[in-house]
Amino acid sequence: MSWFKGIEFAHPGFFWLFITIPLMVGWYIWKQKQLQGNLNVPSIKGFTIIKKSMVPRFRHLGIILRSLAMAALVVALARPQSSLSWQDSTTEGIDIMIASDISGSMLAEDFKPNRLEAGKNIAIDFIKNRPNDRIGLVIFSGESFTQCPLTIDHDVLINLYADIKNGMITDGTAIGMGLATAVNRLRGSEAKSKVIILLTDGSNNAGSIPPITAAEIAKQFNVRVYTVGLGTNGYAPYPVQTPIGIQYQRMKVDIDEGTLSKIASITGGKYFRATNNETLKDIYTQIDKLEKAKIDVTQYRKKTEMFMPWAIIALALLSLEFLLKNTLFKGALT
Image (cartoon, rainbow, N blue to C red):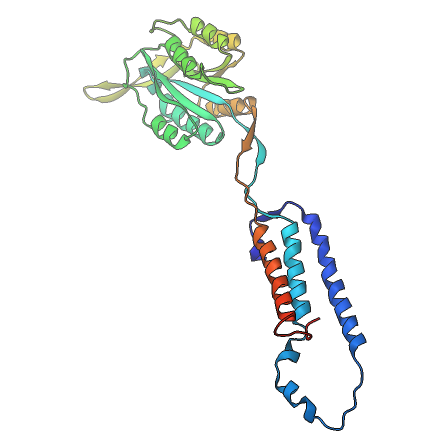
């Protein structure tokens, strides 16, 4: 019924009172039959005025008004309300900082199209699959900076992530600085779970903060770090610009797995090795499954009482019946 679309009732038990309406109508019909009788008259001349009157046509108006008033009163007693009300729910959400290496070696093409672009594309898919999380992005090379602070606006984050490229900052691999910058972004977080996903394809060779020191800082702030080493086993094709165009060299893959494993161990995280696009995507899937923190959410919504119009309608109908019964149709309505 369109009248009650988007409406809920605080006391729906009062709807049982609708039973009284057919009982009331039944009693009225029974009473009318009891009042009926036979009358013999010599002519119909005495009823000429009555035939022209509209009163007989409205002899049942009283019970109609009474029934409608009762129906409106029942609805009012059931207390209709707008369906916008308090709602408690539970969702999954954590605070996540992604710390991504954008050094020159990330252009190696053992991933398609290269390590940097593959890491961006797969991370963006990861972000899209976690709509309830606040996620941010730190990039590092010879130094580090925050590309995007923690945000629930994932469209902004994805656009900023898509814009990162090699050469934005001085070349090098400052793993400790990248990790410390990400920890600093999570330091004030009150989330139940605080996580850093750190991706690199090399060894720390720049920055003023050693990776293990940054890991100890992360531990102090209850930040868990998942480290990911990017690179195939052995050698990877690396593009080099020459006077005759781009030439490929075989570059040795040199990931400091010992340090990355220790960072994960200190902070309660886990170390992963990604050798191609598929394994990197699987790593993000594993992290997604590992990090499912339940957060209670209360949605505050305004509740509007809507019983008053129904009460007014009931009062108006009863008043109309009383007025007609004692004035225009006096003696005709019962």
